[in-house]
Every structure is written in C-alpha cells, then in structure tokens.
Length: 382
Image 1: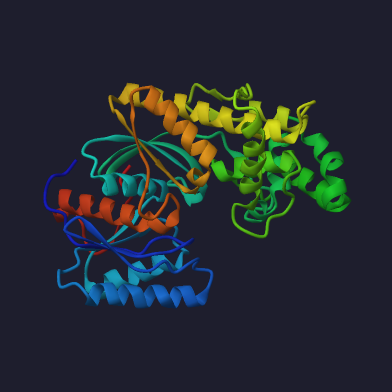
Image 2: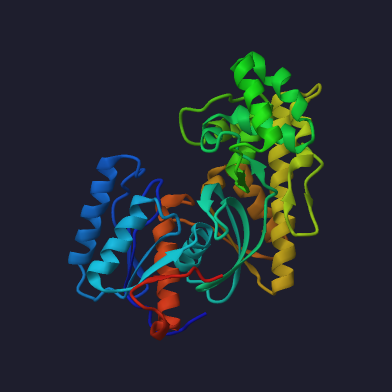
C-alpha cells in the first residue's frame, strides 16, 4: 500500500442513494445523502453539494473520482468538474470501491480479501457484476472469482420482476421448458411463453453475477415475490421467511448444492431445485436453508482466497450485507477461521458510502503515480 500523504480528492458516488465525499488528509467530508439520481431534484442536490464541498475546503483538489458507468449523472458531473478544475478524472470500479470504503474506514494496512455483494455495478468487462470475490491492495485489485451468472430476461425489467429471475434459474438448470407451465398462472400465458422463448434464444438476456438477482430468483421460485415495487422487496421477504423458520428451528441445515468450480466461480444453481419443490417443511424452511448454504459457501470461498493470498483481513461490502442472517453467519464463520472481518459502519454497506471508496482508491492511485496521470480519464487499475 502507498504510504505517501494522500492528496485531496473529490468523489461523486454512483446512482443509488447517492452521496459525494471529499477526502481531506485521508479523512472523509460527506455531503448529505441525495437519494437515487433518477430524480432530477437529487441530481440538482448533488451539484449543489459538490459546489459546497469545494468551497468549504481550501486544499487544492488533485483529482475527481467516479463510478465506471458512463451514463450515471454522477459520472458525467465528475468529468465536467475535472475538466473545469484542470485535474485528472479517475474511474473506480463499483465493487472495488465498496471494499475500498471498508479499508479506508477501518484504516487497514495491507491487502485484503473482499466480498462485494449487491444488486448491480458495472464491471470492467462491461457486464453487470454483483457477486464478487476480490483482492484489494490500495489502487491495485483483482477479481478472484464471482457468482455463476444468471441471464436477465428483459434486461433491467428482470430486476423488478423476481419471477423472471426464477425463470432464468430454471433455464440455467436445463429446465427452461417448465417456465410457461410454472409461471403462466401468475403472469399470464403470453408473458410466460415470451420469457421462455427469450431465454431459449438468448434474446435481450444479458448476464449478471449479481447476488441480489440470485436472492430474487430464490424469492420468485418460492412464490414470495412476483413483482416488486421497492428495491430489495423480494430479498426482504426471503429473509423474513428464513427468520421465521430459524427462530423455531435454530439447528436447520444448509441446503446442499453450492459448489466452487474450477474457475473459482461460486455456483448456486444446485440450491435451486429445493426451492422449486419445497417438500414437507415448506417455504420458510427452504428460505432458511438457502440463506445458510449461501453464507457457508461464501465463507469457504473467502477463507480459501485468504489462505492462498496470505491475508487475514476480509472486508464485507455491498447492499446484500444488510441481510442480517447472511451478515452474521458469514462474520461468525470467518472469525472461526481466525480471520479478521471488517464491514462498513458509518454509512452502512450500501451505495451511500461508496464515494469514500472511490476517493480513497483515486487518492492512492494519484499518490503512487502522479506523473502518469493526465487530466484525461484514467483506466481502472486491475
């Protein structure tokens, strides 16, 4: 990790629960949380907050950081600000920023293993990431593995309709011919048939490694959510079902079937058959078994990476760690493996704290190689 004094860096955050952060002498100075940037009022508030942050601190700005997604208002604002200030603009990959925010908050020195689990963040390959095992050492980072991808039938629409993710899981199991019969009673003959055909022909079905979409698939398979009007509604329903069961059956066993493949991908497809056919114990038991299996598999995955990389620090980031069952079981099991576990505290594990990670990575990168950074966009450091 670079030990030079950190420069002052402004970070503009991402899209959801946006907040900006100014890193001054290694300490964050935050704006208010503006909310999602789909709201023009939130965009205007971000602009005003950035102006206030810049006006309130005399130190010259060395760089402006942002998410890799080019269409985010926060990205476009960062590019404009950097050009106006004549300083570099530095793109930071979304999940790298999640883990870096934890490193910065806890002042961790040296490389860490990161589990970054959320709904979506643009990856360096242009795909939608969200179930990531990372190695992070300052501005340097590596994607060690990811969850096996699921198709998003209908693109972003699949994130609003968990039944589509359940259909995608059926397709991934080689049982796509069951989609119409299973889901037509809930969503209609034509829609169910259309999604079955989309998946069969790979039409408008981008891939994602998102943990959030796997939670949606589980909730959809169990019939807990067909469509969701609020973010994470399906995942919250799934957690509530698991909580009900575990309160009465604390010795519940994890579902079998999660495996780490030869490319270090965590494959959750084996968990899904038990969700489509819940058996005698029912929905709540299956939801609990899914949670426990996912937590245990994530723990094994991170522990193996820590051993291979010689790191004793594991950082947890991303909105899926708002799930208490997942967070507590992963933490307990990692600690039992004599690993130090760190998670976001001040701003929580979601995107509201992401700008700290962006600023910290950009500051580390700038301090390490200031002579190599121009006022143009820099490439993400992988």
